[in-house]
Length: 198
Image 1 (cartoon, rainbow, N blue to C red):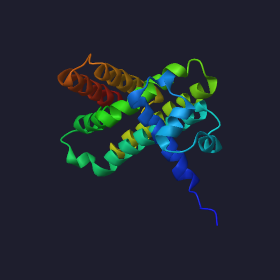
Image 2 (cartoon, rainbow, N blue to C red; image 1 turned 90 degrees about the vertical axis):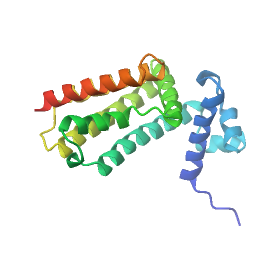
Image 3 (tube, rainbow, N blue to C red; image 1 turned 180 degrees about the vertical axis):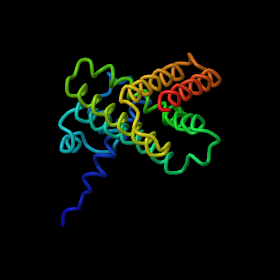
Image 4 (cartoon, one colour; image 1 turned 135 degrees about the vertical axis):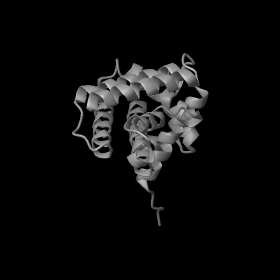
């Protein structure tokens, strides 16, 4: 009797193998065979789940977008506005969660940066990146509106916040901002958000 395979679990294993490949090889040097070897499966088996490296990359982008949104949602569920002395402190806490750059987050961010660059050349990836940003914008708007009990701020504010967070992540990742500068930037951004929504 043939073994029953959990296709979703296998796809996730392959996506995580691609992430592991990012630890040892530059993004543009990773092949489908590398990913298969890292996942511990034969190359032809990988091709039954993903027809190309681009398909693995798209699935990875979905994975990191879902992880980022889930991380922010978990933070909101675990922290209530009443736990903070002000709206600004609450927003600052959420922003700190979003720019957390521990070793696993740095790896995800490395993959995301490579994909943003690749998105300039691959239309399907570019559309996926746009969907990721739209999802993040919607989540930011919803969280700010629900927890701070305000009407949803203008979408331009959510776009501004996301652009600032990306810049802070990039600057921190590349060593331009140390911990204190990052904290000051987040503090300033929190103040801008609160001023904009009040």
